[in-house]
Amino acid sequence: MKTDQMPPGRRALLRCAAVLGVATTARLLTADTAGTPGRTAARTAAAGPAAGPQTGRPATSPVRASAYRLRPMTGYGPQRGAPARPPVRRAPILRLPGRVRSMVLSFDDGPDPRYTTDILRTLRRHDARAMFFVCGEMAAAHPDLLREMVDDGHVIGNHTWSHPLLPRLSRASIRRQMERTCDIVDATVGRPPEWFRAPYGAWNRAAFELGAELGMEPLAWTVDTLDWRTPGTGTIVRRVLGGAGPGVVVLSHDAGGDRSQSVHALRAYLPELLDAGYRLTVPSRYRS
Image 1 (cartoon, one colour):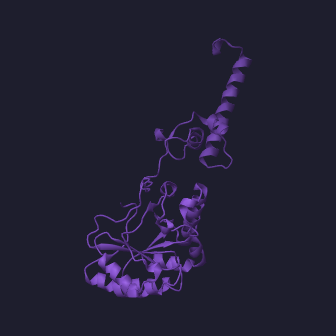
Image 2 (cartoon, one colour; image 1 turned 30 degrees about the vertical axis):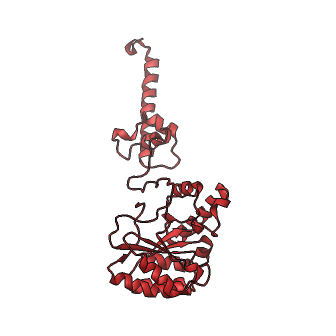
Image 3 (cartoon, rainbow, N blue to C red; image 1 turned 90 degrees about the vertical axis):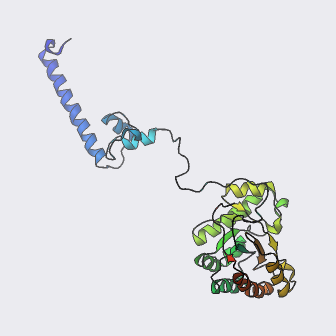
């Protein structure tokens, strides 16, 4: 039935309903654009059909929030600029290629204030950088040394929580060892480690897989000073200088026993390496 054919009473009722509908919609639009708390999808739907982010609708649109809520959360990959997860390797990195006249000094098992403090002081005196593969329980006991490392431009690596032999642990235990150390480093210096080294150099597939899942590259070494055997300061110096070369990674220790020979050896070989034209630096993230 056409409107002009309706009885006058019904026409009046329709006009009133239309006026009320417009007024209600206007109130909903005003409340939503003002950012009224407690807005629901039903109220937004009453104001108009949902629109996705591709419509170019202004941010004050009353339907934008409901569109995001109701649309499935799909297609959201890593944020632009975020580092990619490193590959799962079958062997650790032994040498850093493409580093002409550059070497990496690394120290395991610390930090220990009896030795780490002197090592940091020597590196600072020569404006050299190094890597410190810390054990979580040592890091938790000496957080100030971790902060000092970062302040001086050194790199902190993950050396597990308590220095166990990884192949003897379950996969869950290896994860706990690695995650706890990542957590304490992150909580102390504001970012988690990007490099991992297995205690005793004992790697297994779980260590490579879990390290990659946690965003870390596995780094071993090129030259082992065997300083943990306390062979004498002169022997340590000769091993470092004899193995020097582009991309070489030197392994020493700043905890886990008497490391006074390691401290004295660094004071001797570091200036000689610099005089020979080497730069003592650290690797960048995920550089293989």
